[in-house]
Image 1: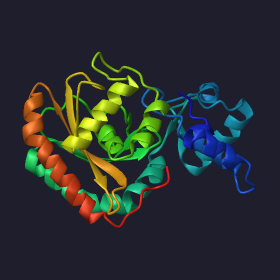
Image 2: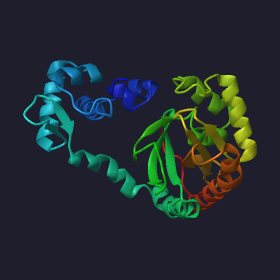
Image 3: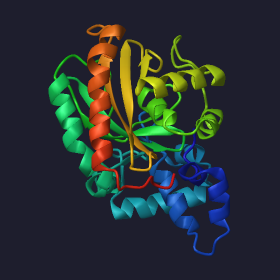
Length: 277
């Protein structure tokens, strides 16, 4: 997946924005350079950046020069490859430090972590993904490391399905149809009708549960955070390894606690509105 400016917004919204005299193309291109880096591309030269972003070499040269001068990029040793610097964290941490939902949710997510001893997370939607915005980790064995800012698909994650279950059937169907529904494991559900059935079950249960649909050996349970109007804002989830937990025990022991935490956050965030996605 490339990090072209169109990836920063929906394609329709992007096309409309580009027609506006307020749209700054150079800024959009610079941001696409920053967002091109990731676990599979931690360092890139100019040619690799051009391929990753879809921008021409001349634009990449100017963008990289500017970002390096501002301190967001740095050369890797004496090579011609570039990496993000610590300064680039300012862009993401600014949101974490100012988001009202995170501030209101953190005490409850931390309390859930203390009660269960397991990794507890708050995730917000963006596009067809859920993004980790708060995380309290377990001191127990956890084979999977998920950092703040990590994006995972809605359709095959507990947090995502919990969020989708709080939407109307029409809205949830739209999200599912727009998702790139790949099978991450042999257990991943990708068929739209089957997914809609799982969402109906989540509405009835008050939580969503997945078993090894995105990571082998992982069981996760999630519940949606809503405002006073019932609009979904985020989801809380707990992820545990199947080496320590059985599915039925997650349902009986962890699911009720996740649901209670989500309700507590919903009460604290009842006056908030969903962000524009």
